[in-house]
Length: 144
Image 1: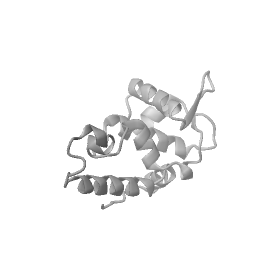
Image 2: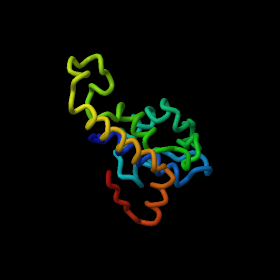
Image 3: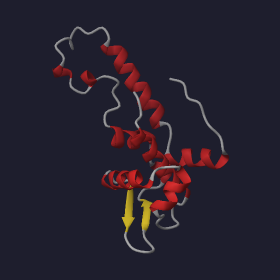
């Protein structure tokens, strides 16, 4: 599985909003500056994050963006899934009827194990965890 810039920037935007959870809306320019995200691209991402139900947006001079849910309850698997789509390493796991070898494929269990491990790791991390690591300046390593 390869995470695109959309996924990376989207997660970073949510981490920035987690730092300010409960403090009211945060302007796009602040998020873009603090997370090194090009602001025009961030605006597109914020629309996707709003549609996915992760943030709310408020217009006006005191407006901005804020998390709807507690960042301690927002799992990385949800965010990556919403921004990137399927977490399956190969398309046949999403549509087994689309593969003529589905019933005899010796690789299918391998692909399923990779998908399950990916989901397990992403499920174990919340947006709050990432915000705390960023505050502490630590980087955690994960192995599957």
